[in-house]
Image: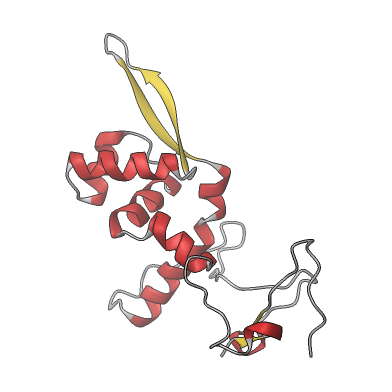
Length: 164
């Protein structure tokens, strides 16, 4: 269980509605097709038709999701032109999109462990071939298990209030 700290301990004294980073992130990526487009972008897909085919959605849905992900700053448009064709856009991950990938990989790992009957898919470290996992580490480099994770309210200046 995650430990709420300081003024967050009294759950009836505050509301996270509209302020929670999870809520705000879900507003951007909360559809299955948005997550799958991000997965495909991370795998190197850049072309509109390839996104539609690989995600298995209509061109209208592809257009809407790509526009939303561009507006959210997770993808950017880059013009290209095939010989004899009109200029088109391809879509590539931005830094913010790349920063989101541990979330996608966490979902991959959770689904692999808890939902999939096909356990052959694995995340691996290309350099040594060992299985790779997604973890939470503190700024000091310590592995933080869920039982040691806290949420606190920082002051607007950036300093955290004294806790405990």
